Image (cartoon, rainbow, N blue to C red; front, side, top):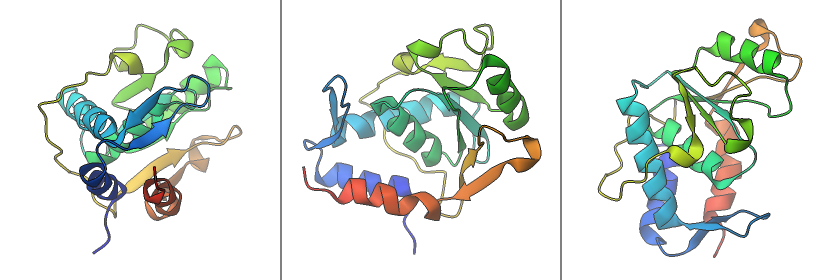
Length: 180
């Protein structure tokens, strides 16, 4: 049986809770595996409470940061597809992609507040995602679920590309397998 990316990550988090999982190069800030799994579980619970379910979409408008990884894993754990949005696009281009994919949630970082309209109730700033240490991982997604809807900068709605876990598993497996 093929393990999903989230299952593989959770296994490593159980075995290496105190080891460093990820570090931001610019700030030097780190998450241990334990801190990261807590954020993944908390964000997954938050998404579920907001009506995000298996097969729905979670758009992400963030620079390369630790919350990008934990938000991605949280969405995957509930079977939602992630829609990473290019931070270099104009507001109009971003809105076109959002209109096309119709995400149930849009997670942004503080640098992008207001870029796509602050009155959209689907928007949540990544720094405001809750962190609850009393929740447990509950997987609704599987390794066979589509993982990502990706747009290139020239994409129109017909050019969407749904990518399965297999496209990402090798890269993330390498990250998870490294020794701290």
